[in-house]
Length: 107
Image (tube, rainbow, N blue to C red; front, top):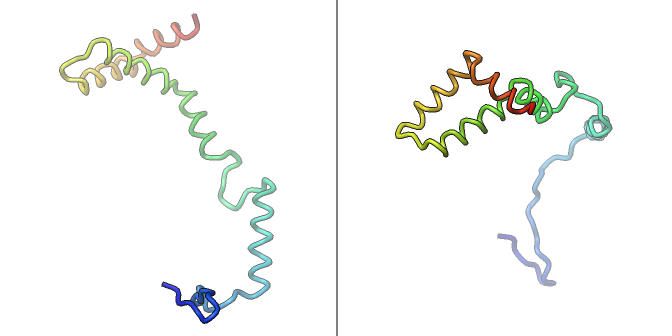
């Protein structure tokens, strides 16, 4: 806890014992400014992770598959829901269920 001096101001211990050199600070500021202006740092892709994830889910129809399985679970209320989900996923893997889902989506 910080101590108070005679005038009521709090005295805080130094949070940082050393101050970075000006060249280091300028380099960090330049990097932060360039990244905020849309430039990518080394190793980053051009697309942000959220957009990549959404694109992946859309390409593979993952949302539709899980929505369908969730609605089937709620409707049928099987005694073994995990086995039911596995069976439904196996139908999708074989192509039977995915075709049905995509045809229903188109109509």
